[in-house]
Image: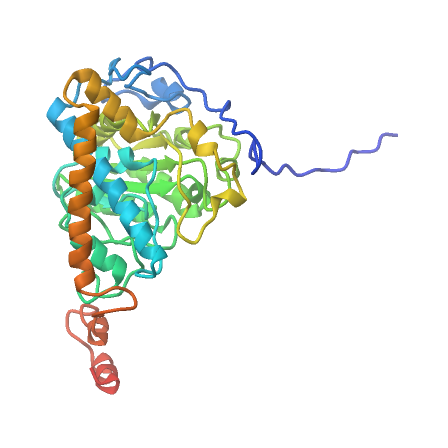
Length: 410
């Protein structure tokens, strides 16, 4: 008579804990230019392997190589460099402002700047992003005023959202930036619905859904894939895999699929992985996926392989769950340094010009910050009026809100 062995439960663990040596041996990185660029109307089944590889354009020497290269001019790349540098400088100043008590909360993009900045360039006016809190580059790269962003962070009298949102949760219809939701994953399926509505109206505008690796464990992620694949919605389904959720490594949410992109395969959605720290590769893949959506070829799922170099937010201490030197060991490098090296190789940039650009951008950001702070900060200066909370809720204010406003004396 045999006795069955007791059941056991598998709990994924990160390769290294604080105090250990960083280990990214599990990140298989193909040579730049090695991954083919399929036709726009390719059959998803024939490119299944792209869900397990990584599309790269920039090689270790700073050269752009392979079939995904050559889509941007030198002038466009220089502009992209300045967008990323502006976002990084903006982050640094707002992080300091939070530490000074001028705002309650902030979230950096350190190491992820290429993803949102390059993706924005591939979109057209009127397309709509449904972002998370780490895609401010979509606004920076589209010329949204930094003063308005800062006023919203400070919740001051000039806050364009009138104090109705948390800091960093921006909103701008004009710039194709749907109001950010603090409830994770909810907007993924909203993006698919918006795209379906655009198709029903016979419009030409597409949607872009954004989600982090940890949030793909939410049910809304899977529901979005069902609707997108069933109705061939004109949407790009973006997953930013920065290796860590708040304090949980990617293996918890990824499960046994091997990659996040692989999840799209079961829905018949073409799925690709791209080097998220390679500005040129991000743009090329974004342009490919956006063109598919615009040509009524349905959704594309894109996983951006990157690394969150900073804390999850100003409320987080990453040294509690990962080695302090882990960001230095990230094998795909820094997006700004990689584009900088490429531009130097191209002969259109230099160390001196880079330092000059840093100084110019810092001056611009500081000037915007001074103006924003002149309207108030979290604990000083002007605040949104309490009256504002009653406006913009209904087209015509109902009697019960009028009574509440009168009772409040505003």
